[in-house]
Image (tube, rainbow, N blue to C red; front, side):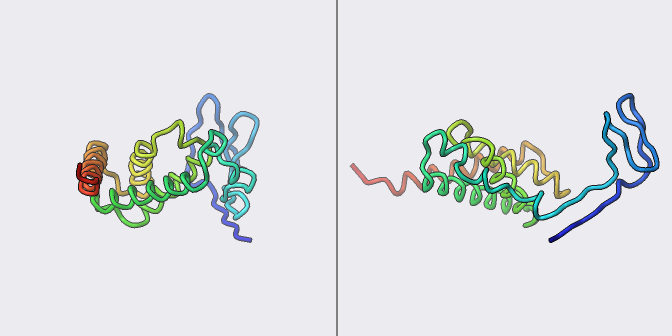
Length: 156
């Protein structure tokens, strides 16, 4: 079992809701002093893996899998065009998957979610990109995809 423990560093400022003591920081009625990361609390619980919210909304497993793959490929392509480090693209893909284990593909546009994941991942991994650049790259990728779709249509 993997366990990582980190103490909250440095001086903490006290606000009206939070105060500090030797054991950590008091927020409400709980004292927070360490972060415990284990395999048990970092993975999505099995009961949330199936059925997913998309399945509950009537989407079949193959279509959901295809949308997940397409979303990750979109994040990867956008990350390359934005010159993001690979770790930021991987973080975006993890965020994308985790989002859709809580929300449905039927109710949320995977392209918008992918865009938000790239934006958030770039900030998390300290390789920030302007939101305008992220939007422009996704718009460019959508135009390319539209042109490719036009090339493969049968001629009437």
